[in-house]
Every structure is written in structure tokens, then in C-alpha cells.
Length: 263
Image 1: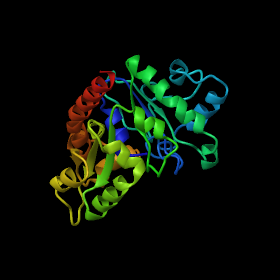
Image 2 (image 1 turned 45 degrees about the vertical axis):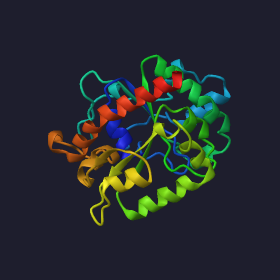
Image 3 (image 1 turned 180 degrees about the horizontal axis):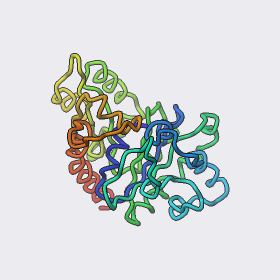
Image 4 (image 1 turned 90 degrees about the horizontal axis):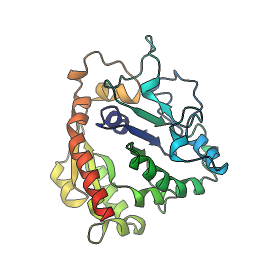
């Protein structure tokens, strides 16, 4: 799971659910963010099972009885291996990714069902952040891509990533989503500054997509969210602070996109 997604969710200004929807890799949230502390069976495989049984809806998704999502705000404190703390009063749920890639097969109906379900959850006052991982050509999760209020692409500020993105957006499945009036307005970039040979933000603004935020090269700070590393002085964590600074623009852009889609 993207480190930035979890970091953003921890500091999101409203209740939020994170969906680890990667189909190329097993869950990294369970051994990373949750530090392998949990015996929970929650995850994408449970969503797929609930879908086949007609039990997947917005209410059941966050109902602890169905064990589809992990309510981070309700977890007990584990002093020896604590997970990242949430701000007081914040509510955050996580649906971990697949525990085994064999579970990915036969999930086409799930991806078609999720946009409507997540929209209903959002209308109830819970925002949704979906981590898709890498998006393949003619991706089976295209329904989520097309229904999202906003699409944010993560990249390193290198010529390598600029070239990769440029070539990727030339392919038909992505070019059709970026060309035309209003279509590209939902899409933006978050750049992680490269330690070596970094490109300027303006290069990505000009050739790829608008850059919404830049994150520092801070492996120690990022490890708080990717690996559950302890963070005794969060105010000195450059990565955490950069994420917090990026949230107003991210939240506002999502709201504006949602208004355009409704209009």
C-alpha cells in the first residue's frame, strides 16, 4: 500500500476509509502499518466473498460484525509494538489488500460493485481513499477509476518516472481519460523528491499533470506509515508534516471535482 495514502488517512480532516485495492501484490498494510499485530481476517478477500453472498453494502462494510474493515480508532493500544496513533476523535477504517493473489481471480463483479457502494459510504459522511497500486492496461478496476472524484498519481521526481508516465498516458486506456474538456481536471500528481538527479516540479506540470504536492525524501519519516516505525517526535517528521500541508489542496480538489460531476 502507498505510504502516502495511509499517512494522508491518519490526518484526514473527516472520517475516512482506506481501501487497499492492489491486485498485483498482497497486503502491505497488515505487516507494515499494523506491524503484524492483528489476527483480523478483514480484507479484500472478505469483500469479494461478501459480494458473492449478496452481503456487501455500505452499512456492512464498516460493521464490526462482518469483519470487512479494521476500525483503527477502536484498536486497543499495544505498548511494545504500537501502530501510528490517530489524532483525538478521528475515525479511520482500513480494508487491507488481498492476503493471497489467488483470491484476485474472479473479482470482476466486485470492481463493478464498488463504485456505487463507496459513493453511498461517502454520502453518509465517510470519505474513501482507494490505493490501486499500479494500473495496468485496460485494468479490471477501471470502474473505480472512472467513478472517482479525484485521481492522484504518485511519482518520484526523476527523468525515469517522467518518461514512464509520459509513455503510459499515451496508451489508449489512459489517453481517453486525460484528453477532452474537463477529463484531466480530476487528475494530479504527488511527487516524492528524489535524492539524486531530481527534476523540477514545473517539468511534470508541463509534460504530465499538475503537481498537487511534493513530499520530501525522508525514509525514516515515511517508515512510520509503511512499516509502523515509532515516531516519538512527530512534529519533526518532515514526511508527516509535508503530508499534512498537502491535505487542504487534496480535500478541496476532491470537493470541486465532486461538484462538477454532480453538476
